Image (cartoon, rainbow, N blue to C red; front, side):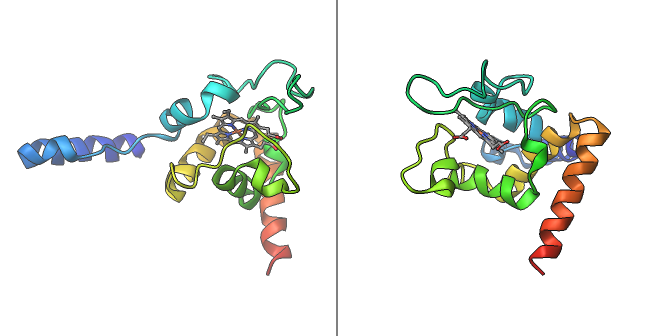
Length: 142
Ligand code: HEC
């Protein structure tokens, strides 16, 4: 579907002529992930080595987003919040973290695309658990 939209955007850009240079083509969740997240979380979502142990500066390394990490333990609302505001702001109390907030860099739709890509790499079991956790979170807030 995304590829279809992209090719349509390209068609429009060509039809529009000089305006084409200004058309920003929609990026897939995978492309957005590689551009914004892979430098820390790994090109194949593997995370940083020894991610459970604090580095010498006292901060935690980037965890994997694949099944070996705990991204799939969190509801959509929490994941989106972490990505938008960064871990230091969420934890508060002077907690220091290398996970930046992306609220000024990515739109809500782009964050959703990235999460969609991350989820698409999970086995069914992890995806089902995360869907249940998300549903429980929504119900608890109703
Ligand atoms: C500069 C390095 C860096 C970049 C770039 C980065 N992260 Fe992180 N991320 C981290 C670190 C380090 C943590 C662990 C933070 C902590 O617990 O203190 C983390 C944690 C997270 C968590 C919480 C995971 C969990 O299981 O609790 C999510 C979700 C996340 N990052 C998503 C993203 C996404 C999506 C992007 C790209 C839009 C991204 N990160 C880019 C370093 C980074």
